[in-house]
Amino acid sequence: MYTEKVLDHFMSPRNTGSMPDADAEGTMGDPKCGDSLNIYIKVNNDVIKDISFLAFGCAASIATSSMTTELVKGKTLEEALKITEQDVIDALDGLPEEKKHCSNLGVSALKKAIQNYMEKLDV
Image (cartoon, helix red, strand yellow):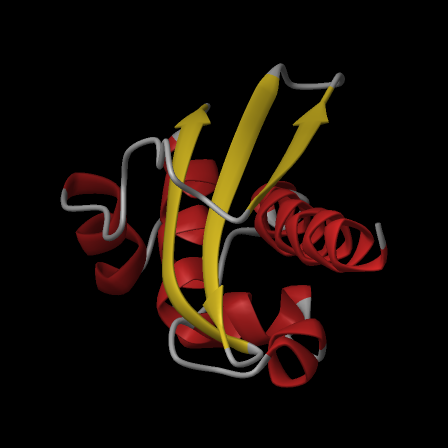
């Protein structure tokens, strides 16, 4: 059902945990399945220097959240905003059709965190 990469990111997720000194946070939930995700970012010179997440959900939600953090760490905010759900799915070598919606959590929470960061700069 799941690819080796999905199982790897589920069993050994990268960049987990809260980040008390985060520059911004993005939260997303999927009311249909009950999954929820918080993404935390530290930004320096418009580059995501550190990122972490806390997720409550299924294997696919945890794996896609982990992969999302891997894909954007070290990228500029502009580059990170271009990451799509399909990029996450492709990086995991695919997801079962009924689990593809899980990739929305990571990308959506990331975009909310970046938006939160940008709003703080405008204050």
